[in-house]
Amino acid sequence: MNATCGVFRQMAFVACCSILLITHAKYAAATEVSLCDYWPHKAGNIWESWHPGEPSYYLYCIEEEMNINGCQVWKTMSGSGDLAGPQVSYTVFVDGWMCITDRAEDLEQLPAITGNLQQFLPLTIVVDEPIYLPIMRQTATFRIGSLFSFYPDGIHSMGCNDLLRFSLGDQPDVLVLTTGWVKWLALGRGLGVMSDRFLPINTIAVSGGCDSSLAITRPPVGGRHEEGSRLELSVEVAGKSSGLLYQWIRNGTYATGQTGSVYTIEALGFGDAGRYSCIVSNPGKGSVQTLPVEIRVVEAGTLPAAGL
Figure 1: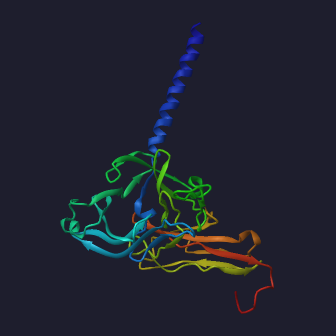
Figure 2 (figure 1 turned 180 degrees about the vertical axis):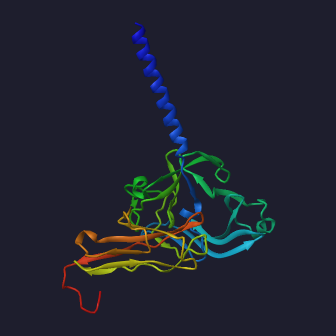
């Protein structure tokens, strides 16, 4: 009897230790990400959604960058749904938050958050941990996964059952703002807005990130290449040349070992065809991703000698 009790006590002790270890691992592994890694802000960046036959649209365009009282400020044009047209607003990075307002006079009081200036998203996000968002007046949670893991079939358009799909294809690293089952906003790493609640973005023009060193001057170029030929894709950025990190993406997944400014395949095979892009990061200051380019592989000897 005593031996049996001892065994049960030992089993209970092991179970309790396992629970404590799992709980500790959960909190120890809490992932913090920078908003600038997922929403690059630079004058000229544009996110747009237009779908044939759909009356709704989404537009977010960064028009101008300013520094007011030591705070980064971007003048933006945005609109969605049945709005008559894009509306002027201002995005401000202040006190650890991305804040927004539609009144220029609110900027005069920076770094104070006054008037219509409201806290929208934290600049440092803890994944899978609920956070109260003042502008939404409710608690929300940020999740991370691939784009198609959140939207495997696309998005049901507002007011009908039509499915709208993502023209840029899958992305391996997407930050999604959720409340319960509702997905309010999806941000692709280095790309920014991938969808709002009702519309997938199908036009993105991102030339740089929150940090001035993340300005892409020469993105990779797609095209047709013969089987067995050498492929070299490259990306160049302005300003800072050292300390930047690179990660190439192939067909919506991270390409193993491809972490330099140049992606090389010595002898192309038909299986190498697909979409390629590159995320460039300045640690702690943000990321920007080149738009996917299409690489097509054709039989050897079928291309003109002069090139593609």
